[in-house]
Image 1: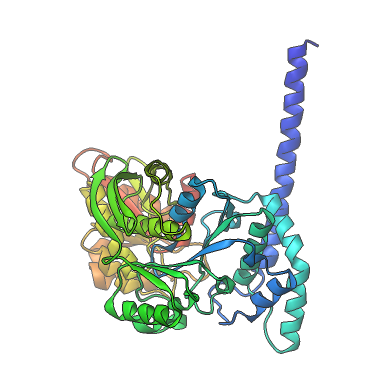
Image 2: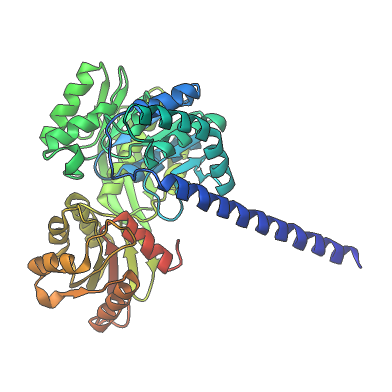
Length: 470
């Protein structure tokens, strides 16, 4: 055997061993994930920090081993978190990022240096925290309470993984609300509050004031609050909470401003003003006015974390040029163009259609919509109605997904019967929508036709898998 053949054989054996190890890791991940999923789900809320705080106390409070930027709000949290983490990392600092929900794999929720932890590492972290979780499970049940929930376990795992890495800065997105969210055991140096609107009313309150009160609970003593432009009722609540805690506030529209923005190929060019200066001609490879405002919040949060100084132009340009937001105005297929977006409430839907109108020149757009049963389906569909030629309602893979027939009744009230179609499965809905788009497109097959898949993060995740992006 020649040296080159011997080397090739070694490479093949090494690749085979790695493939087998990866398969074992994925199998172990599936087992652990199923175990964690057997706990109370994310939407089954028991509003207390006690269980998470107790586990972390037993572990030596790993969440205190690094600085934290904490984010809440109704829409834009994940995109803002991703951009914030990327800006911090561009400064040579090691980062952790905790976001939710995930699109394809639960490992996406816990990222170190911008990369989701590997399946094998996820299993290791679970094995590290499991003894402490089990202790607190027993303590809680002995007092008549529940075990830690799915989200509480993931929160503990994220904080442990970040301390073990170790990271310099963690960028942490709340799961829901703020005050009693599992993540609120951190003392955030910076609290970012994206736009507040009605959502999750069952848990957060029926008014913007009530929801803002819950979300302002992440503001800690003497922190910096980076506040997006808000409804007046929400702004008053946050400002009062900040004053009570001696926190410094940076408000969009006062200290912060998107000074200019222009549509560009593949995204937009933005000028962003903060107390530290004006950043001009920054390319952001994301569509929509709302992403420019998310970028502004991320920039201000990073400045605040680093002492309020202006950031280097090259650093800002490099970080934003690398920004990504999977599942947010993401083009996943062409001919016809298929776009997925996780808008799941009326405010998010309105931001989405504004961005579509600005960035894409569709002559005919067909919607594929599947929503959770507890969402404001009528408000969501009403925001889409002026922009969609027709809509195909369906269901996603969640057991909380609204029944397509029930959703169709709501859609018919909004769109009229002739513009509403029903498909029991998402793959069928995609096929129907693509046919409808191309059938009515007079500019040539796919040239001006589009399909928008939206209504839920789960809907987007399912669609990405179907088109090979998952």
